[in-house]
Length: 246
Image 1: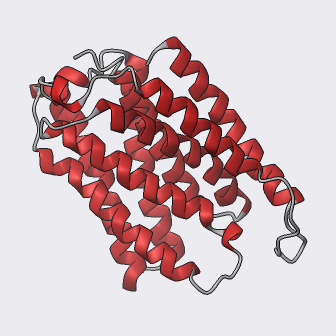
Image 2 (image 1 turned 90 degrees about the vertical axis):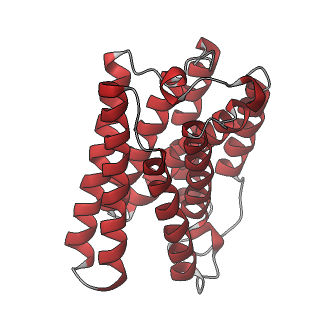
């Protein structure tokens, strides 16, 4: 990332959780019903969208990207590599915590295994890329499939809640992660678009920071670990790509 993008990323990583906390504190009564007030988080998200969409205009178009995945995402720095590995292990930890809290039967078991497979697939892709420079591109489609299923399940679980503010952050995060993961997987098939991936990843990163507040307040530790893991992976891939000059 460019220095300006790093500064903007840090700014929104700090602003998003602060905005969500203020929103929950000032815009809802003790019963959880909305009381009105300034839309703190939507304002931050709108600003992030404008900033990162404008920044992405200078990135290469899809037709300009001709190198393979390893030529674009180069995990040369130890800090970047550590963040990616830690992010993958946090997804595995989230799957384990989900099993402990959700039980060993039914839909929770399936989703926990699906999440663990997604974390393992991302770690495999990273390790294989470092060792041999190549990996099976289908590995990057595993997180996309999981996120689509999780998005549907989350929506259905909250469909009866008439207060959108209780769960809109999580829904938006899952949708943004679906998009960012799909754009990331496209690079493995040599059809990646930096102008699409970068803003989607930055917005997903901003939403992940905001969603951490919801997960922490609700004591959903599996969700918190998943949000942190996703955030670290997004940061690592954005940093590994540099300016997509590969």
